[in-house]
Length: 206
Image (cartoon, rainbow, N blue to C red; front, side):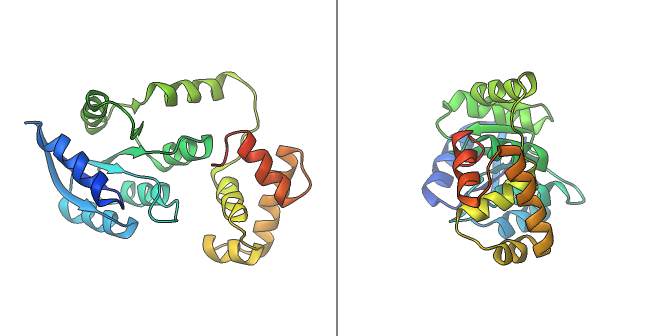
C-alpha cells in the first residue's frame, strides 16, 4: 500500500486528487496539508511513502523549500511535484530540492497515477514536456542561474529591495548585491528591471 500525503493550498484540488487516488486499491491518502509548515509536520508524523507537493502556497513559491525540508526528515518520503508552473526556475528548484518527479496539474489521470507509483518506488516521474526541457538544458548551452540567484531575482521581481531580499532569505545585503551582480553578468543586463524582463523572456521566471 502506497501511503500518500497531499500538499496543496486549494481545497478543491486536494479533494479532486484524493478522489482519484482513493479509487485505487494500492494507494492510501493518509493526510492533507494546506501550508508548507503543515506538510513538513504531517510528513514527519504520518510517515507517508510519498508527498504530492504543489509549488505555490498562497502568494509564496514555497514548495521547493518545503520539499527540501521534507527530504531532510529522519525518515524522508519521496516527493512528487504536482503544479501548474513549469518555468525552468521552478523545475530546477524542485529537482535540486530533492523532488523525485514533476507533473503538471493538467496531466491525464493515468499519467498522475503512474507518476505516483513510480515516485513512491524511488523512480523518476517526469511529465514528457518537463523531461524534454531538462534534456534540452543539458544539450544546449544557455544562460543558467543558480537556485539562489533565481530566489533573489524572484523576490526582486515582486518589488523587494535588497534589504527585503536579505531578510527573507536570511543572508546579508552584501550577499544579495553579489548575487545580483552575477545575475546581471549572466543575463547581459545592467539593471534590476532588465534582469527580471530577460529572465521572464528566457523562461527562468514566471
